Length: 120
Image 1 (cartoon, helix red, strand yellow):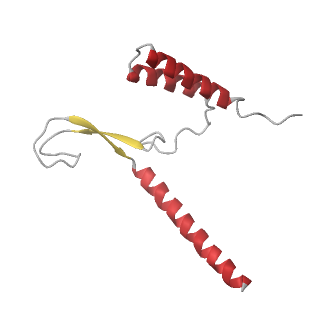
Image 2: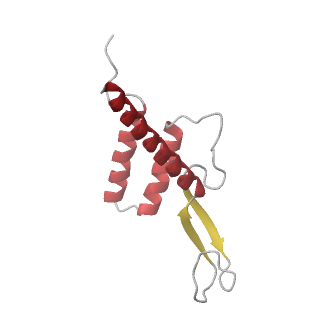
Image 3: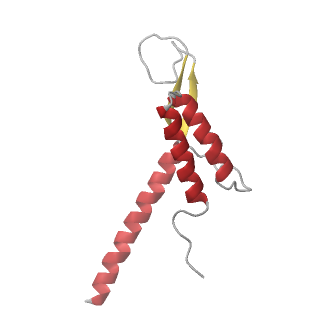
């Protein structure tokens, strides 16, 4: 029995989807339309979990869409008067995951230092 190659399963389908994306762009399809097509294909290819997204704010994209009502109750952070618009910003779940990764790195460093001291 041979080991699976890199170009098998999902990998091959993703490579094919990216090739199709590039072909569409060369043929003049707008980037937005090509991205929508690529997203559709990848959502069909990548297995869905039975649990749905962990973060309801961003559906696990780590980008939160916020509708700003404009001045004076601006939720976007602007100080000057402005009209309604949509803002995209990092979701709070990204910050929490980044903090968890940092804590893990620090713990790993502490454990590595302790192991070096024990070996002495």
